[in-house]
Image (tube, rainbow, N blue to C red; front, top):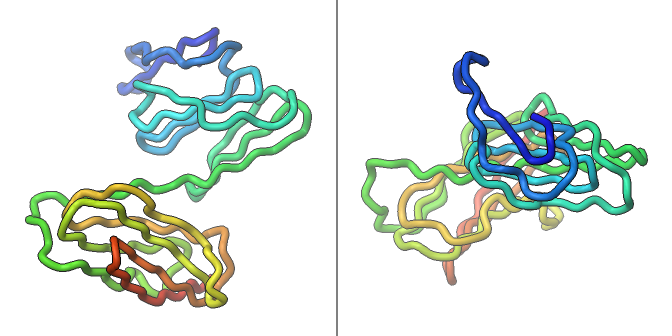
Length: 196
């Protein structure tokens, strides 16, 4: 890590290092953190870049207000947040979104289905499995008992098949929540219980 745009990666505990693609922008790289293939890099300016393919490609994710340069960035212990601190005292936080995982080796389901989350009750994370018989726009949203949106887990194109999403509720209070799956005019809702 360091330099104007160079990022090096090792997969054998430092025996050999390879250069990944160059990080866009200018200024020295001050901080780098990641989870699995998701990585975030902060330059010596007010910009944070992200990669979802282990550092092969990078895009600008966030430009902080003000002029303070980022000088420290860290991942929360529960892998749910990225915290970045700027030289002007500003702090930015980003909630890590868990990508949708497709279960392979199964044929496309015949019906639109939303399974009960597991474990349930849960603390702080639970898994939600859903089936969609055809590819298309899918929305999976979490609501509290007042009907207020608590999190959006999926909002975009999804392939036909069985999908699993992990919901991390570490930033939410204990209580009952509802999760709603919608594709076109089909809607399914189930209840879950967060106990801390």
